[in-house]
Length: 245
Image (cartoon, rainbow, N blue to C red; front, side, top):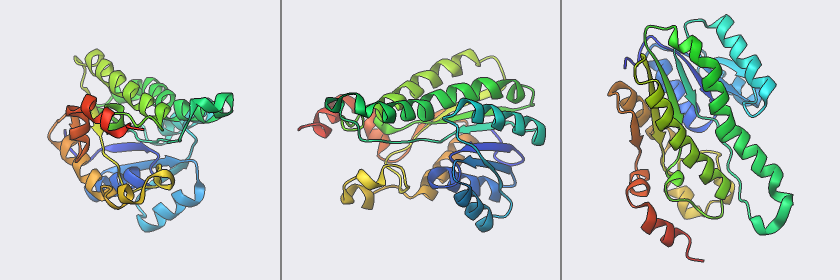
């Protein structure tokens, strides 16, 4: 697909992969809209890249999602690319009992329900454009999960499955469905509970963004970036290695 001249909505676009991708696409002559929960982070992103359009939205909240989509339809009727990037990652131990359920609900709402709802609500607008794309950002951990983050990994595995089904359903339309499978990326996501050696070896967000742009331009509908390819190809053996305790 063309990576210029699009109107792109990126969820979770104020930091990490989302912001790096927004900047990369902005530099290529696209109109780029980013949304996130924190107004200060969005404002900082726009100050650094004045061409960005920003919108405060919590995609885990049903009403906030609906408001976001209504605003995009009215203000940016040529929107033809949706990037489902927003994500939350928690350590969850089911031995802790129901005290963990609030974190479970937050992860499911952000990582899985939001892409489902946003895709469903945005699809009529996307389908009305001459060319369009849905880009789902999953994770290598959807293929070889870390047992300490069971719900995060499960939501990303579900997003992988969802993307395959959505791609099949839309195969006779001009809406392309991409899945981006990143490795650990240098961002706020999970940084506080990752070992320091993992953080130090994380892929820069700009490198991940460059890989996404390359996949879009080459019509590579499913791409695993960096070490995520190992997780996808060796999932069973790696699960045993990653969860020895």
